[in-house]
Length: 570
Image 1: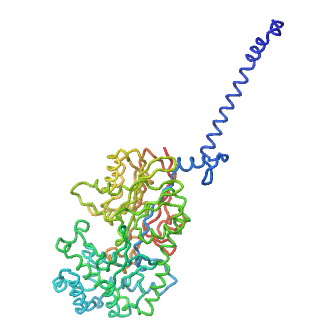
Image 2: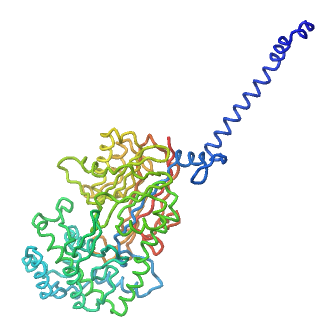
């Protein structure tokens, strides 16, 4: 046989192959398993450094971090707050601040002989001049309201502390719209002459205040940036009717007369503020104090917010913001954030109310930006005949595809004060997605200030647990899981007595008891799309949250905490 094999090389080959086959096969299997394990390691660890990524990093790193994980941040930046006195702040080093704020608290809580009639502060002469101005712009007379009601009210007990007046927003609404107005082409806003904003004019006497107030409200046109182009408006033209649908305490007659009524109440309110400050302090003390606080809390607010978003949360793939001013959007686009992100304002952006929801998409993750805006489609999905308290700019929803072709619906929403629009808006968003074949397969990211409450007043405020049941009913979950925790607060602020909603004012000793301490902010997504790797909340600007601390602070510029979550794809 051996001889035969030597004479037949083919037989020798067959014999050798047969003998070597088990060892070779074993080596081959080991090679395959090792290669698979190493490839898996590279995939998940992002270590395939030999595959170059044109934007830095590697293809495998990009797949690991951008496809398998998504970083989402949401924040109500509270851009509309320009009142340095609105919230209690820790300022123990400044005795004048504590003395003034505690004196104003005492003035309101125990006014005594200081509780004079309105007409002693906002005089008959002032009302007559205001009436003439309002008549000249075509508004109906409200002298009957003045004569039979407002002039004889006491400045504290039946005007400033009137809870019904607060609920009707007759003083707070004109303040919200005209307090601080961003003007096209100017880096500095225009402020109404009042104590509670950045106005730097002389308010040492009521006469000086009134002269400046009339001129501001009725004489000077301001150039306002709108979606359709710049327009010139005088501040009184910016006022909007206060509707019973959104504020049910206002009567139908008051709704029809709400423009002149809110102008009168706003003037009375400002007159009382000037009177109070010049009573509890002197212009030489409180006016310089105010300007120092304006510099620290207000003028640096936008630069501070922009820097925080860029340097601390600039690695997010998606950022949703609420209560954003048009000026903030312009500055964001012009700075470092504009280089990193596509920044989208809503189609119905309101430059006067200036509380807009914004969607920001990281350019590296979403190289083509948004593919469409679907905000109007969502609004059209509200139940027919049901009044949903949503104003222009509150809602913003877009579609986009990431760099790997994955489709998304991304939405940002700012709920009304009581949170009553939150469930209807979410219902309409889900309905829009489900009804449209071009949306139904997309992943949903929804960042919002839901304005939900730990202990809601039934029928008047949105309970957070009811909200949880609602979104889970749509097969959605949140960065907090299916069931919200009532005590997982994202706000802790306490308003002072120097702001237009005294029903929300807190005594210096009762900030925690009566402050706005609630679980208001959420990031929603479909249960079948993602799992939460981690979620943080932040009220320091350092990716940490100090429980029990009232904010904003001199270091943190908003009354809402930041939420940031890392989602893992399923």
